[in-house]
Length: 306
Ligand code: PMP
Image 1 (cartoon, rainbow, N blue to C red):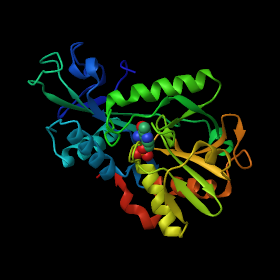
Image 2: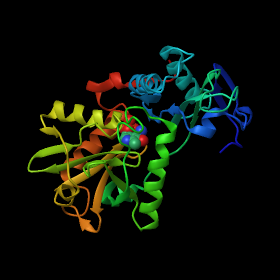
Image 3: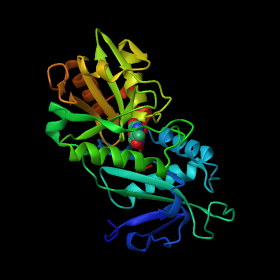
């Protein structure tokens, strides 16, 4: 990844991709205290547009606030950096990765002289899952790892270190023959995937876990917005894993995963064992929205050409 042409925004300047380096004593590399975002830009009739940029930047600032990191840039500067990263790398579609991290001025948990750095990279990263997975759904395993408890690492921050838990769970699921993990909270209720929120559909109602132990997903919010527009009843509540087994439909949501049907959990087929009709409707509306084909939600798009 590090060896390619292009530009990365680092602390206010566009620098050549290969020169965007940090020292091995970078504090965040050692202890994981930093935060980041995963954002996507899609190709639209008016060129590349970033989906829900404001919401992603707001979450980045909330994450930094939770972690007690003082942001050295404004939201406007970060929004502009993300547009530049797409535009100046001539990308039509892009995955955008802003990150806030602590520098190498000191080491140890008490270090209080650390500088907060910010970077934004953008590259072409087509789809997290295959086109077949978007239609047929994926196979999921309940993880043996518990999702973070709110008083261990706080789940409202998209913190770098939180992803150790996600990667352990995902690696376990993949080595067990599944494609994604479903993590339960410390009381055994469904929380989320390694990098996705979850929804289940049963008896005319869509259900999704409350946000106690999961990230405030922006794709999750988009689905809730669609349900409000369409009058689809939604309940945010505690969900048990056997409720997922007996759901008519289930799907994950996330910027990387988009709207991804779940075909199977722990060897139990969910519904018809493929994308259900409501999932298909919401997925297709999501793709319309990100590609600028949903005029009623054009406010979600930021065109990078300005
Ligand atoms: N949960 C976790 C743990 C995640 O990493 C992500 C991806 N950011 C999500 C949920 C989904 O969030 P979003 O829809 O904002 O990408």
